[in-house]
Structure formats: C-alpha cells, structure tokens
Amino acid sequence: DVVCSSDELPRWVRSSTSSLMTGDQLTCGCHRVFDCVGSSDSIQQALRVVAPGGEVDMVGMPGNVSLELTTLWHRETAIRGVYAYTRADFDTAIDVVRRLDLGRLVSATYPLKDFHDAIAHAASAGRRGAVKVAFDMRENM
Image 1: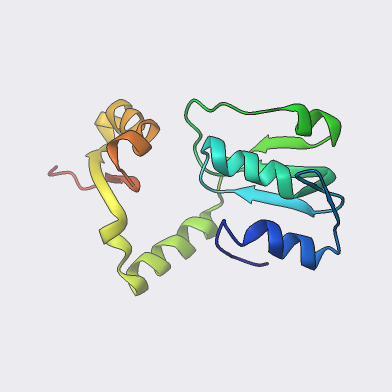
Image 2: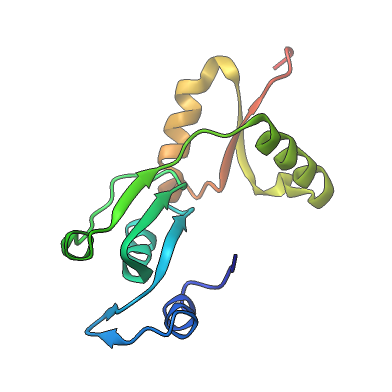
C-alpha cells in the first residue's frame, strides 16, 4: 500500500508499474484504486491510473460529479461503491481517533434523530467546508 500526494500520483504509478504514456493514459497502472474523496477530479485521476480491466473503489461520498467516461469504457474499468464497514473497522477507527486527537477534523455533530440533516450536511461538504460530520450518541443532546 502506498499513499502519495495527488500531484505525484501519475508519476509514481508510471514508475512503479513500468508504464508508458500513450497520450494522457498509462499503458499499465494499478489493479485497484481507492478513491476516498469522491470529487470529479479525484475520480478522473483514479480512472487515469487504474490498469486496463482494473477497478476503482469509491469510498468517498461523491456529490454531483461530471466525468469523461471514454477512458472507463475503452480500458474496461469497473467502478464500485464501497459503503459497509465491519465492527473491527469501527473499533480501529475509535482507537485512532483517541490516540491522534482527530476531533478537530469533525466539522459538525448531530444527534441521531437529525440524521437527515447530517446526511444533507455531509453531501454538501465541499460547498460548506466540512471535513467530517459525526453523530453524538449521548442522550442529553
């Protein structure tokens, strides 16, 4: 697994997969790409670096996006939405939040009864400047 900045990604994938450039496309690429942002730019970049016949997993919650789908069709790429998590995933996330004090990344909290408002807030995150929207499960809220 590798994490790198978006401006370094095409160069890193090209050198790591021994790809050549054909126009703005790589001849090879990553077999699987996880897009954790969900923006038009991030999805388009994922489509540029995924290998022919590869898969782009959409982990980030996309809003309304505009995409050029010729590459998807031509390279026989699959896009798959990923939404479910296991109990172990949540336990790990809670441990990380406790250790790294990630509370500053939470833009808003909502009581569970206001889940419609929370989802609307998260869906408009880019326009509202939100990073993460969370639920406060305490009774007194």
